[in-house]
Length: 302
Image (cartoon, rainbow, N blue to C red; front, side, top):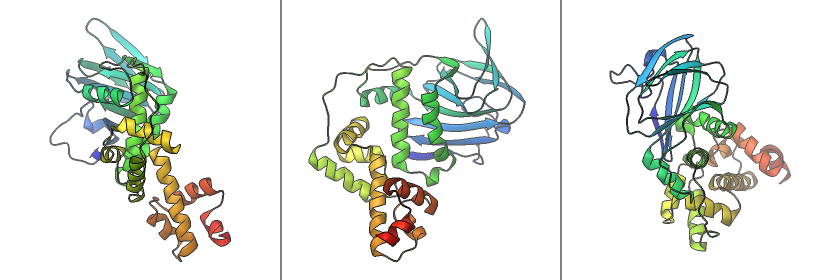
């Protein structure tokens, strides 16, 4: 499911702080999105002097933050001591939201945040053929370049949720969740037989993707149509076709574009929109990467 949870200009219904304890008045960016089992947020503040944040214990699960810039400082208070940290770029923290939290913030920050419920942790592990996960290792200001790269790839979708492919967001959220439960949940992969889609499921999945070239269908929706879990479907689709569902969708867009370039008089901009690309420049980049020629050159030589 792809859902815009909030935006920088959305009303806060009388609340003065967000769900992570930060005052709305100090946030210069406050965006959010839901993909798969994970809620994603982009939050930043430009003030050098920030106030203290505090949150009560809750059953929401775990919060994971990845710093987009270096230099942000915070002093975190525990029951009997306090510890100070400086976040490097790509530095992360993992908080158990079941624990009360209090920290003094100093210096501007720009974080991409994730919130994962206990049920979502179990679901992600189960769909990835991993042992059950109920807890994550707690981290502060440590670097994880793999997670940072995956989460940064979600940033454009968080910024413009209405323009984002549900298929891309759902698939990327699954990859992020799998990395988290494996690296920080200590989950080991169960022995699993090689898995491929049946011919009927392969045809059904490809038809659904072809009918939704704009990506307005999630991995979960396709998986459910095949009566499969999301994680199983992604792995089986890749084993069967040699590519992920989103990669297959991009190839299908290029194939459809080739048909229109060859047989129609539509402009390149019109073909880009008809084939599910966000604009002509996006169309040109993907098409050139796939065929080795720009759409205009391909049309002239076809």
